[in-house]
Length: 168
Image (tube, rainbow, N blue to C red; front, side):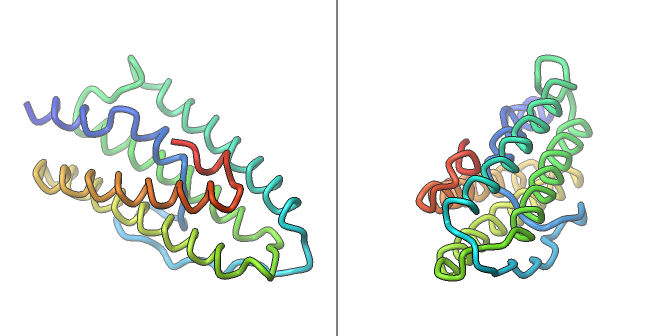
């Protein structure tokens, strides 16, 4: 029964998690965010580069899902593994995006988007920790938190023009 709940929680989660991102490492808690790089760059150039990074992230996430029969984990251990792989791919993408020169006039909007993304990743890491410890009720609570944070992160990304990053 627990595995069934876990599989339901994670159905499509890797692809959903790839819609947003965060900082790196698989520690169970969010890593500190790298400071975004600011330089003279147009919003259009930044958006183009960031969306290209997010497209690569989405492709990697699809590969992760495809590595499991039916695209879904079959037990709790696989569920945690799949979740962490998806979060790691997302973290890598966001680290790359933060390293891009960013339009200085959009600093506030990007700071908000990164904060929203970090909240989603934190919820995902906490969900993985709960699943690892066998606490299905807590995992469900973090899944709900992750869903809300992901929607907020996607909305921030889409509002800025990061449409590839804001897909879910």
